[in-house]
Length: 170
View 1 (cartoon, helix red, strand yellow):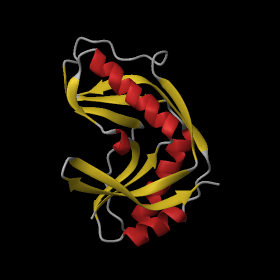
View 2 (cartoon, helix red, strand yellow; view 1 turned 90 degrees about the horizontal axis):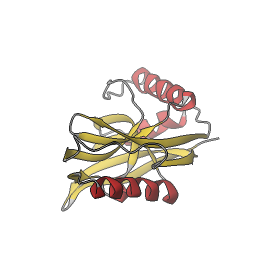
View 3 (cartoon, one colour; view 1 turned 90 degrees about the vertical axis):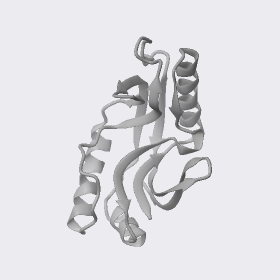
């Protein structure tokens, strides 16, 4: 099964992200907008694995203290538009320790450098000449109280993400 470790959002954060998407649509952006129920922040993309129990056990072994993330504005990368997540040393430290624990336990994962972001639109068109949303127009905070092990499957109407494990923060 295809797995990743992520932060899922509370209702307020999800609503703020959907409002950011709506604002982009009002500016004429078209593309593959991430469905509200699929909005998340990927911490580690694992890919194909038949060891979800082992991965969840590793997640439980990496101490996670609750912290706050703040989304502030949007940015582009190639043909995608992301919600920007402000730099957070607690988040960066946790991801670094989690990745080390996965490596130490022979779990393969995508080794690309971690960049905190939330994908709002893939294959975006009509966005080259519009201003990206600033933090003044698109800002929300959320307390992260846990992380999720997620399964990704192709559904009838696109990708379906299902939480199959959860680790609560202290």
